Amino acid sequence: MYRPRRRQPKISMAPLIDIVFQLLVFAIFSAGTIAQPAEVAIQLPSAYTGIDSPGASLVLFVSQEGLVYFDNKPVELDLLRPELQQAVETGGFTEAFIFADAKVEFEVIMGLMDEIRLLGVENIGFAVHRLGGEL
Image (cartoon, rainbow, N blue to C red; front, side):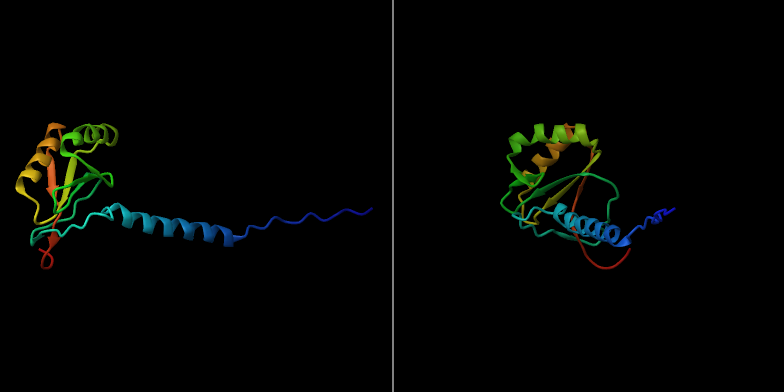
């Protein structure tokens, strides 16, 4: 009597490697787009004592003209509080970082800091271009 032989299943690694490679490429490219909106040209001020901050934080950008960008879109300072409130409630942010151009007026920065502090976020930092080597 004839019995067909059962083939042993084989697992091909090539599709798995392709998928992992695509995920890696996606992660690298998406990480680069989080840093700064493309339409905002910011020249950060320099500092010797700049440090890196671990963890997730609220990120805002201020252009040289004083335009505030949050979540990659321009927002009027008067309308910023509801958007920040929602982000703080959903994201649980306890700190904020301001990426402001070196030539932004002080009044704009103070208004932005005031809006952030009114939401209960007390830890506010400024992004700078680090000068020199390690401390």
